[in-house]
Length: 167
Image 1: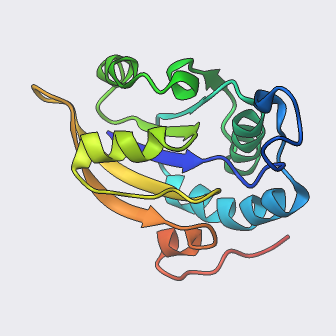
Image 2: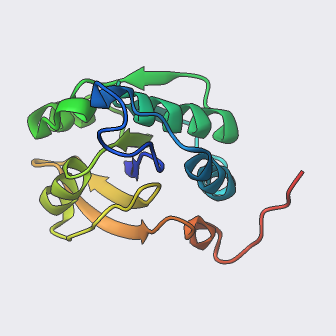
């Protein structure tokens, strides 16, 4: 199973909106995601089972909407553990998924870093719009191996430098 963890894009400043859950993506954050996500689309080519999970918090939902539109993923599943950071719920959800699945999860810090550390014993700091790809082994205990960590603007590394043609 492949797990792609994505931190939501750049959002409004903390404290600018109340409650915090209503902060939305800023235009610059949307632009960066729109520039990066076509590379994710190429990475997902020929994958038969791709699932998109998101936190219910607005900035994550908006990021997931962009992933859905650009990567042509029809359904977005809102998962409460992506909002609460419940690691046990993450593991339970992963155990129920097919081995050949690719799961894209849009979430928040510090949860993504904590989960990466627990799954593959690697410290990853997720910048806004950043991502990591983890190969998950579901045998006895769920473990993962870090495949790639991507800072914002580095999604082109998914295609080994192959450029995405712009419409």
